[in-house]
Length: 385
Image 1 (tube, one colour):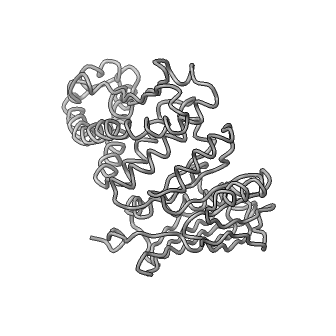
Image 2 (cartoon, helix red, strand yellow):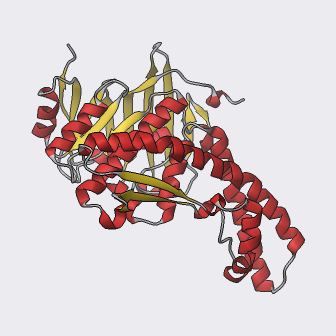
Image 3 (cartoon, one colour):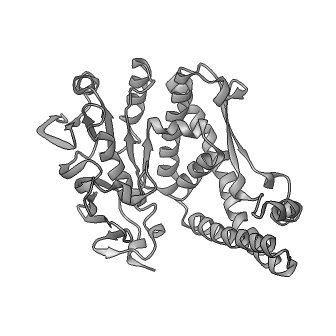
């Protein structure tokens, strides 16, 4: 077993260092182990700081899949470094570096990972962002990515199965395309790929099914808390594997696969249906209901990872007043600042508003003012009693 994969004690992020990351030329920040707030105008870089934290936990940007596009302007590289502190005082150093036209480098305690997948789950985190609206409005791939991101942070076998499934899927698609271009067909060769695809896909399906069954009641409780139990919500896992075996599904879809020259059925076509009051959330939900739905989804994700993985995730809350009224923001703060939550990072445009939100409630916090890619030297903090 690699050193990188050893279990970690409970941790919080103590320091963050950035060089040439997005609109930050250079930044050094020291954090509270509880609530940390980034306040400043739109475009100042608040969300970019959260994205840097997302890199430290999940090895990638939350917003941009192309690492090279996160390098500042015309610079040649970016660096993100974080220092995590365990309950017993032990330090863990995480490094992410990217040079233009080169492979991303990711290290833990100065040792480079052979596979980024080995880092996933060691420093779990959950992001709540206005960009989450794509989970409702976007295609099925967004909702599958949501399931994958949750399960992968507590189940290494799932991530390995998913990676292997996608590799075999790519190979099977290439074979189908080759058959179509050459106007030939080799059933025996295809059967080999079908067996591999089914073998790797079944654990993915079973893990998703178990996850949604356990996750939905937690989600529903959070929605009731945030909305005042105004309406009933539902999450339904949609998969053709509910009705048939993976092997039979591939046989039935083969005529269509040959015409389309790619695999048209399998766990890569699964979806989630979001409902409210018996109707599709996408069509029937108001902006406020959809935002509440998404926040409840993320809070349930947090609790599920915490309770299943036995490790406290970091919670990132981007633009908390986006489409939420004052009452729902207060209920959100009641939820995340109570017991059961650890280190939290929050962004908002209003310095005064974020101070008032926590000072009036007697909640310890640390506030950073962000202006044009720079961290204001004035650090405001309400200390704990």
